[in-house]
Image (cartoon, rainbow over all chains, first blue to last red; front, side, top):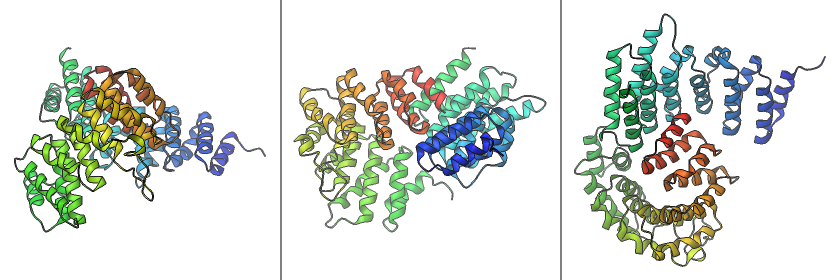
Amino acid sequence: MTASDLQKAVLALDRATMTSELVKATQTLCGLRNLEAAPTLIKVLGFNNPAVGAVATQGLIALGRDVVPTLLVSLDVGNYGARAWVIRAIATLRDPRGLDLLEHALKADIAPSVRRSATRGLAEMELEGPSFFRDFSRCCEALFKAAADDEWIVRYAAAFGLEQRFCQNSTDTGLRMQAIAHLEQLSSTSEAVKVVQQRAKLALQRLQAE
Amino acid sequence: MQPLNEQQVIANLRQRDDASDRYYAAWWIGKMRSQHPEAVPLLLDTLSALNDDPVDEDDRGVALNAIRALGLLLNPAAHDPLMQLLGSKDYSVREEAARSLGAMKTKEAIPQLCQLLSGGPAAAGREQVGASTLKEPCEALLEALGNIGVNNPDVVAVITPFSAHPRPLVRAAACRALLQLMKEQRWANELEQLLQHPEPLVRRGVLLDLGASGWTAALPAIEDASVEASLKLVALRGLAEQSDDIKVLDVMDRLL
């Protein structure tokens, strides 16, 4: 019996110790484009090695939205690094099944980079179907919360996100007015960080130019 | 834990019983850019403990946080007290005072900063036996001169020798300052080369230096650097705030 490519790749990963070996083994695993490699790639995210984590995350994203259910059930809440990568992958895939997770991450995660990724995910998530309006409103409410976050980068992501959410959609004028109000707040001197003001001003210009 | 309000934080800084409350209060005031009228006087009050002999460790911690906070609040009342601290015997106090004076762009501090760097890499930049620090906090001093931004031949002559210091992060601090002052691409080239350094710690430091330089031509190098996105965003914040260039914001959006 010959081992399958997947088994061989998983074995190579188990034997790897140096970062360069781990990266190479992870790249091989990603190259298989096999959904069954996903649990191993998710395990790799917990190694607390940024170089390896970045490769594994790209590999998971390349698997497309079929990987989302696996990502959702395998989130290791105790591992900050792994959590950040999973949130990032789900945000990049723009899959609406990640809404609960991203909403929770933005509300409860102590790591600013996780809240930042979650905010971007809520800004770009592709909503559809009968729950569109409810989900759209949940994304907006979450972005309004992000606009009041203690960390500047989360507020920056909120300014970006409000622009994304309303640059095509003007169905709900109530939410749109709230979004404009939040952006005006972020672009004013009550916002302490200049780059957040700059981004909010740009968002307002783009939204009001329509 | 409930977040503290400004009134509570000011009261915490004023009291003398709980050092950790004072320590946190000094940090909070800077982080939140508190405009409370008592903020700056109370922060300045904490500095007098640095003259005690011996200095109380807790008081020293509060004072160091206060120095950093003063660098964030940018109140002119802090110019003179911070300049006096450049003469402190305490390396960390000189280091933090230099950083805050740089942030405040205190031109009057230039002669003292240059004085501390005098003798170049072989004197101010000399390695200390049994310590990880150099004789002087060279990175902070060089960065301060760059941030203050007075481009004259004397300042440039003091900084330039450090662009050949054995430590890559000192070289980076010198190149960053020279780029800020002289606005010549060759110093950006030096930094971009240092951005390829095998040590992640060096790459991170150099990335922040490139961001702080405000040199927009470095945008592609920052975007492509092998450093985590969180830090690239911090570097790009520096670039965006100095250049007002929308291209920088577009790159930041992609990195979120």
